[in-house]
Amino acid sequence: MNITLTLDDKLVKEVRKIAVERDTTLTGLVRAYLQDLAAQQANTDKVRRDQERFLETFDRLKRPLGKRTWKREDLYVRGHEHERS
Image 1 (cartoon, rainbow, N blue to C red):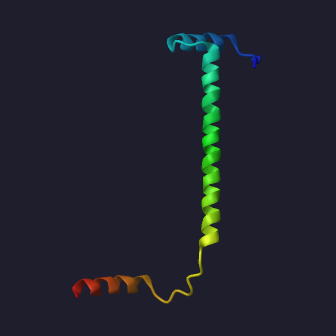
Image 2: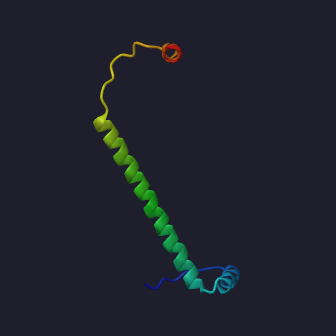
Image 3: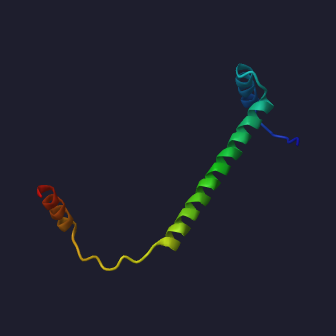
């Protein structure tokens, strides 16, 4: 598909120099940039979908643990008592 862009002459000259240094064309630079942009978006969308699936699975599989009857300090004391025996 062909598209038309309106760009500042100075910008076009600068980017054409970059294209020559990279052994490509202005069109090649634009194409590569847009491909990278689309790939990044696809990856972002995949990460978001994976996170949503993880949270859905977590919600579906979580179970009630009941009331906590201990304190953090109790665990510390019990752990060190075990080391002494």
